[in-house]
Image 1 (tube, rainbow, N blue to C red):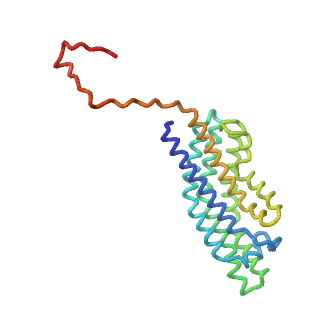
Image 2 (cartoon, rainbow, N blue to C red; image 1 turned 90 degrees about the vertical axis):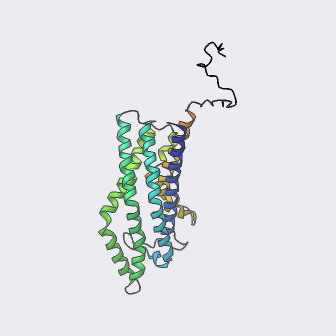
Image 3 (tube, one colour; image 1 turned 135 degrees about the horizontal axis):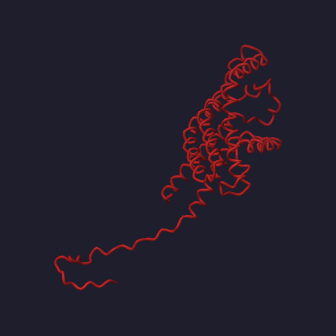
Length: 262
């Protein structure tokens, strides 16, 4: 591993971190509510508060995820290489493969899942003027239920598998980071986010960024590992520049030349 390769590795991990931040902002735009919008859910998914939200929020939220997914692939592919390079045994290599599965699932699914989620408020807003709010919520919930199986499976593959692999690697000390990094995964971050949701408004709105923050924390773990890898690299000796103005001696022309080795 050269210094140039480690520099490229850090750049790619930073791109992954940017992707996670974009997803955090996208989730916040989609779900953040006003101070009075508490306990307004109607059924499994629909929320009465959606009817008062501006359409631009859902559009921008979707665009943020669309921009994030390519960067996510770059960053998490690089994190897979970090994990693979630090694998010590068969178990670590299995965890690396699991991480790759979760990363690929996230790359394929996040834009699908998020687009579905932000379209639900738009559908409810479009139906509500023609039927009762309860009926609009029922139709919205039914549409969501038709897509629930692939959404849940991809979500478990992306967040669940990533959580298991990263948690195991940190626990086994395969990644040279502090045990605090056990919390650096999507599911733990989502749980912490739900706890933050108990805080007074507007601090409670931070809970909506919890799951995506877990992906950001994975990138931070990767950056810490790369920083430690850099410190372990041997210092490169700088070669002294040769003075090009020195005369060139052709030994073939002067066979009897006295050569002094300095």
